[in-house]
Image 1 (cartoon, rainbow, N blue to C red):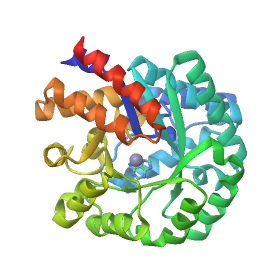
Image 2: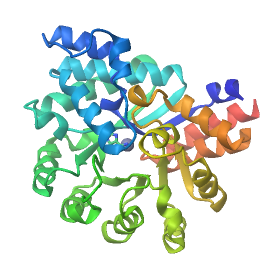
Image 3: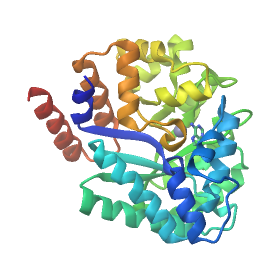
Length: 333
Ligand code: ADE
Ligand code: ZN
């Protein structure tokens, strides 16, 4: 099964580029930028990755990205992820970026987006991995800052496929960003947002995302199971959920494998993703292995998960069809 998973053509829809910053690259960038890190070694840095909920993870995540300063830093970060993705047979990825995590510490928006854009172009040319950017707003900052970031993104509209919402969910409901999302929709962006697992008011946040904002997709979203009406809404609209089992095991008390099983059985378009692989210790392949192991998934069920991902990807139909044909060719082989 491990071999089958390794060869499976994959689609990753939930990965934060800043969450792919491996300790080795952190040290290299610190050196290049003349910064000192409070760790003597890669091993010591990894030992400090002790988190058991969303806020404790986010603290380490934001501290870690302080080494990202220049356009080449973002290029190198993007290329490092795409090399990993290529090695795991990821054929297409939608990659989150948190511009405000950089602009808030004085790094210009332009430089972040240009570095990543250049990586995405080279990643496609050199590695054959297609990828697009999704710009996330940080929900623990004010809505006005999100709106300013949205406006700042407009000259780069062709380089960003959609918007998302991430960071600390406590006290920061989707409704806080209703005006930002309405404007993003008018500008032609596709819409997703995190409804992280087991947060305060998770089900109410999912309701707001679906009914009040009208998102195209939900990141995580397993708590939709708490409300049958919302499950029906997700099914009726074909809204996909981007689940991240290994991440769930760090920010909550479990992988929520049974919830993922239930969603699959209900016919919800659930997908398996990596979230912040450099911190949680698993890229998409390891996440697929973890959920296969927990649920004893069959080959057909694993294919179903990848099929879901290509179907809900933000790609034109002819490209989705080409990837789905690749998936079919792999399974018939
Ligand atoms: N930012 C990066 N990873 C995140 C996650 N899992 N939830 C919320 N915000 C994030
Ligand atoms: Zn995430």
